[in-house]
Amino acid sequence: MGVIRAEIEALDDSPIIEVMREGFGRQSVIPMWAGEPDVPTPAFICDAASRALAQGHTFYAENRGIPRLRQAIGAYHQRIHGVAIADERIALTLSGMNAVMLTVQALLGVGDNALVVTPSWPNVMRAMQIAGATVREIPMHPSDSGWTLDLDALFAAADARTRVIYLASPGNPTGWIMSGAEAQAILSFARSRNIAILSDEVYHRIVYDRPHALSFLEIMQPDDPVFVVNSFSKSWAMTGWRLGWMVFPSGATDAFEKLIQFNTSGGLVFLQHGAIAALEEGEAFVESFVARCRAGREVAARRLARMQRLRVVPGAGSFYAMFEIAGVSDTLQFCKRAVHEAGIGMAPGTSFGAGAARHVRLCTAKGTELLETAMDRLEQYVATYVQA
Ligand SMILES: Cc1ncc(COP(=O)(O)O)c(C=O)c1O
Image: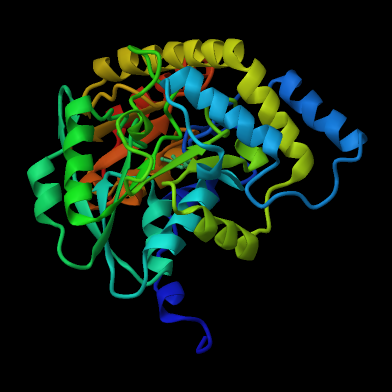
């Protein structure tokens, strides 16, 4: 259609959606394709939002979120990361995705490029393409001990039109967690070249060997060019609420006030009261949720390690398992057929960038019984699978 911008026409559909389409309406399929827990939002969060709705919190409010929520976000960062964040650097967003899009709008234009550490959640790359920017993938390297980032390759890929470095720690799909030394090196490089860091920290609590993943907030100065994206979706089981938040550098407040004004004019007001409850009363839930994720992850790790043909690349955080299958190069076909032939939903690696094309990802934020059944099905499927 001639009226649509070329950048939009050129966008690829997500291969994950292609696989999900195969399974629509099939109750028997065990869904591990999307990054979503199988538990509902805890009642104390829902109740807070319902109360706010009943009390008439139905009017326009501040673009960057109601002050009470921004205060709760600031207190949360103080408690978890030990840093004081000025209120003017905080904004509520309509999901982590919306926070990514706002940041992309603030930083990238036609002809610019962004360095994206891959395998990566695909939506970020699409947002950059919508802005007319070019994505330069920086592939991490898989091994039996996990994924590693080649900092030299990352820095060498930057040129005069590089405006952004995107990375997610813990990563989706990799589970990779950035070390303190890596964070320092990336921050020094970004400062020296005046390149922004888009740090996606939506899985910061989904970790198993430490209380939380390192945040750039812990090492940056308030005016460093670092934009931290966060979300209520994962740690508080609130994917359907579409609530996230971000912390931007001091000096960027006006820009984000305007971007929020002209994109969404702010977030749903009564839902923001649920978000306050999540941050202020949610610690016990987060702990129990991470314990549940740990149990799921252990089932998947134990069962996948035993399967013939599989090569697993372990991750330290988030809630995914990733593996290659000997003799399988077309992972889209592998995942599509798995829906029909095995009743399991998985995500093909082609979704996450060039470096992961031969990998398959599955979400392990599920109950252990369901995962055992899924692993039984996968084991049988893999044992007999022949690529067409
Ligand atoms: C790495 C990463 N960032 C951001 C998001 C966005 O989450 P939401 O838009 O649900 O807040 C996701 C969701 O899967 C993700 O995996």
